Amino acid sequence: MEAVGARSLVRRRGRPRRRWSIPALPTLRPAMLAGGARTALPFPLDAAGARFYYFARNAVWAAVKLLGLPGKEVLVPAYHHGVEIEALVDAGAVPRFYPLGVGLSLDPHVVVARMTRATAAVYVIHYLGFPQPLDEIVEACRARGIPLIEDCALAGLSTDGERPLGSRGDVGIFCLYKTFPVPNGGVLVVNGTRPRGVPPPVPPPWTSTASHVGSSLLENLRLRGGPPGHWLADALRLAGRAVWSGAGATRVPTGTQHFERAHVQMGAAKVVHRILAAQDFARIVEVRRRNFFLLMGRLRDVAPPLVQELAPGVCPLFFPLVVARKSEVRRGLAARGIEAIDFWRTGHPAVRPGEFSDVDRLRETVIELPSHQDLSPAAMEFVAQSVREVLGA
Image (cartoon, rainbow, N blue to C red; front, side):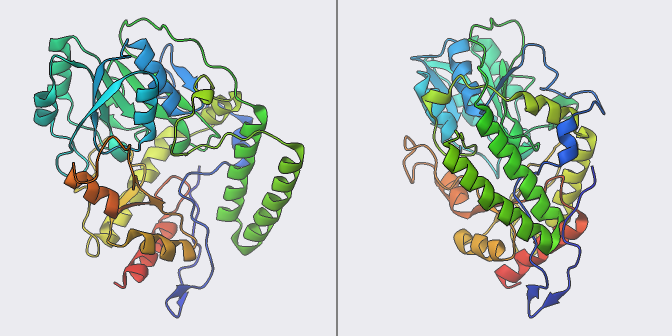
């Protein structure tokens, strides 16, 4: 799969000559709808008994039921999206929070020290594809006979050495549409011999899947088509919205902040598997790592790096940029056609502001820069230069 992006970086009066569309997530090309079988599917897509849901949050809810955690305490990180905590609580678990260590890495000694007789499970998040140090936590969980939940929603295709993230815990949870150009998809993987006692997912509304597929195809057109592609994509989007609204079609949005019980049994669409079969997984990892290195090299002197290195096996989801006034920075990047994400500004209300000062600082300062497999080195240079302009560097 060829990466594409900004074809010309010539600037006029401090602004890009042409307006480019750099989306936060990878986009769908029409050829991918034909499927294929270029390479063997990687973990967790090849895992025996993997359950494919519409959302990763559905997998969180199912994991609580599967592991017998309703009414029991689960240690969870204070730095979280919020929707996964809502899913835990809705399923009946009782969250108790632990802090982060340095950067995006937990301190395993702190996590183990927080385990009590009431602790029934430990929940770990691998942020942006970077593996957490699990050895001590795995050992402590086994000694106490309690399960470990690995949240890999941000860590598709990442490994810790040769071992895929999500394969060491009792369950692994993944979000497919963050890493791949699929319309929906979350995965629950059960490792070991625990019983699989949750009902199978049900198909999602076809109209919702079709809507997301169409949106991704249009984003691809905007990315690759230059100004004519922008115009055509915008026209098609307006026409599609009119038709969809007039027909009263159902659309279940992804990437939302809150858990909805009504969607908990909704599964992934069949087309998700077809699109996954068309992916070049080794290429995805290669391009994401290359793009991350390029941004790190170009931005290290203007923004403190949140992570100091990209270890072998890491497939970075985004490039985390640490800035003051991140809303202002995001607006400046949006004006240049770059979709940067406000990373986890708010969490679950059970964590009070000021309770975890390091987490509060991360919520106030981190935005995610796109660095996915659709983007070429020229696109990364465009993103880096745009960041420098917005920061006045």
